[in-house]
Amino acid sequence: MNTLSYKGYTARVAFDDRDGLFVGRILGIGPIISFDGETVAALRASMAAAVDDYLQDCQAQGIAPEKAASGKLMLRVPSEVHGKALLAAQAAGKSLNQWATEVLQRAVSA
Image (cartoon, rainbow, N blue to C red):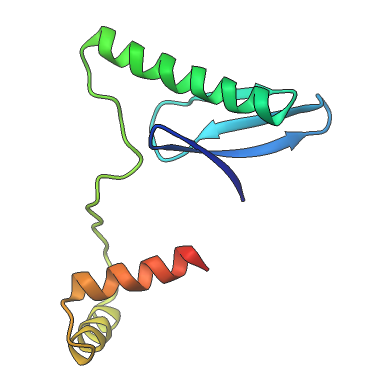
């Protein structure tokens, strides 16, 4: 997946061959924020303008802008998976939170 980042927001980007444009959409938040550009430089500028507009709109409305992740991850997993994960964490001498963070980090870095 091709991505761009700006002010803590990440967007998925692709090339639309039919229109001859790079297109992007901010990931991980409720509002749909999309942008486009004919060149990579134009795409970057368009993303910055879209994010800045979103932040200004939030400020004008007196609401907090959404962020892609709060740092809290709540999961429901089968009890067998939970138990095995807990054992793996304890065997590694870590809390389940530390162990899961490392496992997730490896998964997204691969």
